[in-house]
Image 1 (cartoon, rainbow, N blue to C red):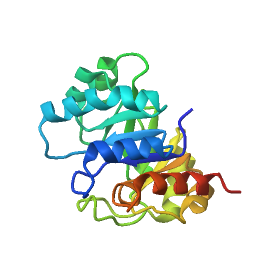
Image 2: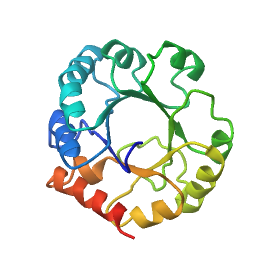
Image 3: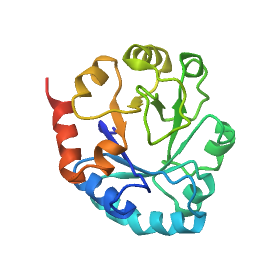
Image 4: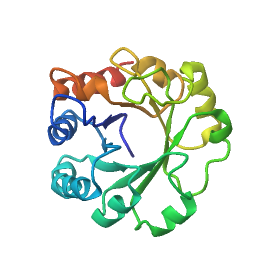
Length: 203
C-alpha cells in the first residue's frame, strides 16, 4: 500500500536533487519521483542507481518520470508517464514484475479510458502551478473528485498543492497528494514533508 505523500524533485530548486529526494524520504514520503525534462539520460540513470538503495532503506519507492529507458535500465521502483509518453500496454509488457506504473490524467474523459496495467494515476493539475508551465486547465477539487469517481485506481492529486490542502484532497477521494514546491523548495524539506504527512493523518 502506497502512503499519502508523493514528493517530486525539482532540478531548478536551490537544494540539489539528491538532497531533495533524501529529505523527502526521511520526512516520510512513500514515493519520490525524479522529474527532469532536460537532463541527459545517463546522468539521470546514475542518479537513480545512487539513490535506489538509500530510498529502499527508508521504505520509499523511487519513481522515474517519463524516461522509460532509464527506468527499465536501472530497475527503478517505478515509472510515471504522461498521456504522450508511449503505448501503456507496450511499456507495461517491458517492465519487470513489481515495477510500479503511474499515468497522468488531466480530464474525466481520460480517467474513463485508463489502459490496463496502470497502478495509480496522478490527477491534475488541481491548481495552476509554475513548476509545469505547459500544464492542462486546472481541474479544481470538484474536478479531482469527478476523476476519482471514475478512475477505479488509487489517485494522487497534483498541481499547486501545499500544507492546508490535505483535508480537501482526502474529501475528494484521492489516496494522497503529489507535491513539488511544497517540499523541494521548502526551507526545511524534511520538516515540510513531515508536516504534510501529519496533516494528512489528522481527522
